[in-house]
Each structure stands twice: as C-alpha cells, then as structure tokens.
Length: 121
Ligand SMILES: [Zn+2]
Image (tube, rainbow, N blue to C red; front, top):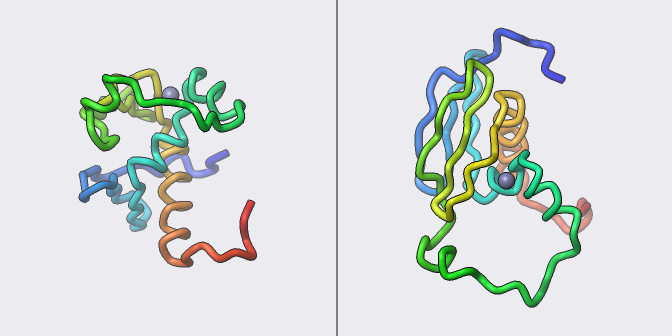
C-alpha cells in the first residue's frame, strides 16, 4: 500500500486526547484515541465492526472503572509497527506504520473539513 519504505515516524507524543506523530516527510498527523481504537486491526475488533451496533450493549465494570478510552502504552513491534495497550485492557492491536499514517491523515482531513451532511458514508 505504502510505496515509500523510508517513511517513518520521527516523534510520537501525546497531545491531549490524541496521538501526535511527526513523520520523516515533514507531515504531522494528529489521531484521536477514539479514531485509533476504531481502526484497531486485531481480529476481535474486526468481528465487532462487522456486527450491527448493539443498542443494549452495556459498559463492563472494567470499562467504567477505566474512564475515557486512552492508551496506557505504545510498544514498538519491530521497525514497522506499534502495539497499543488501552486502559480497558485491550492490547491485541498491532498498528503498522502504514495504518498509523492513514488514520492520522484521515483525522487531519476530518479536522480540516468538518463533516457535512452531503458526504456521509
Ligand atoms: Zn482490537
């Protein structure tokens, strides 16, 4: 997907409720925790996304105790991925550099152009 193998994050840091990444090509992306979690590539989250939303889903005690969703750790996995550990205990998502980049670019685009009714998908 990514045709530029040299593209890599130079710096990752927390910025309020988001992850700020400075990239080697000079672009900075800002991805909200919710956006990152929605993009979680693990099998369980893939299954979850395929299901219709459950209006009767209740928060588990653990989710309530954890408070607003946020990562507690981001561990490098080789040179091309990060494992994100969330405060609700979810830790099976390995985010490739490409994925972090695409989530970040989408988040940047969304904040540059606030969503309008005509472009829903
Ligand atoms: Zn997941």
